[in-house]
Image 1: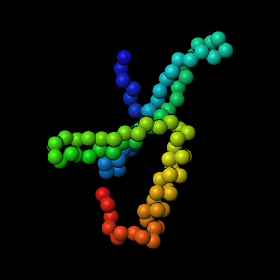
Image 2: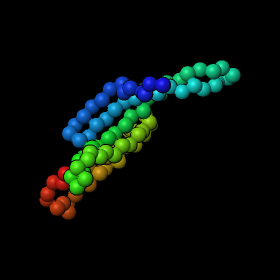
Image 3: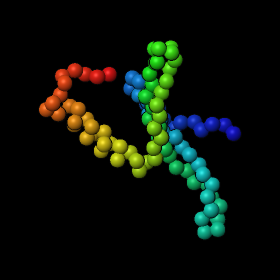
Amino acid sequence: MVGNLPIKKWRAGSIEGVVWSNKRNIERDGEKMEVEFKTVTLRRSWKDRDQNIWRDEKLNLRKQDIPKLMVILNKMQEELFLSQSEGGGDDE
């Protein structure tokens, strides 16, 4: 079986977002059918300089997870950029 190919990809620096199409066979009301659903993968890559190899972290999400993730990211951004106790420097 050939691996699933992405529908669309975006990249900003070391962050990548990918939308995938997935198919699953189900039985509904005694009838077998194939349903399609989409998922997303967020990936952050970096080079481990000590071992001289590339590493990455992945987070796989379903459609209903995206609004929740956006709320959490906005709250984290508010904390980092609007906090009164900022350290003053930018992290990576």
